[in-house]
Image 1 (spheres, rainbow, N blue to C red):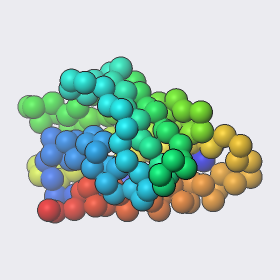
Image 2: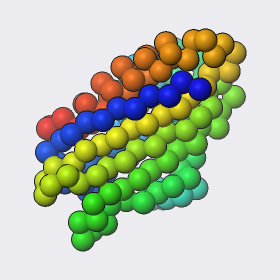
Image 3: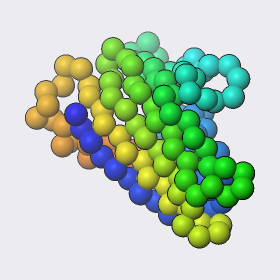
Image 4: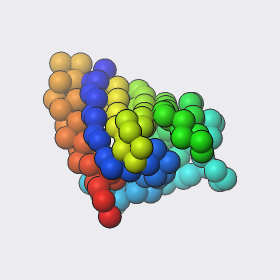
Length: 148
């Protein structure tokens, strides 16, 4: 599996950082050639599912995911929130974990760790895949954390 980790700091509250990094539609807007497909109804929680579609027109693939851990930072200022996604597609498998940790009042560190596998791609390509994932998702995470 291609494994990568991205860490970003931001002058945001834990609640605001959490809102931004778990906004799946915002992710899709920042990742090239990607859009959100199906999304579970209701608030996000363990068991929620959504699908990202990557491609151009009819050429592409679906990346269905399920939230298997959903622990938002608490309203009383709990210092950490964790969201873990399991990728359950025919093309992309693996997992992603997003952690939002308050480092000081009004300041957070967001850590995005992902392990992914593309079916049909030899494992020898994992370092290249990890590098590409780190670059693409690092840019998206930076944009999500940017002061708007």
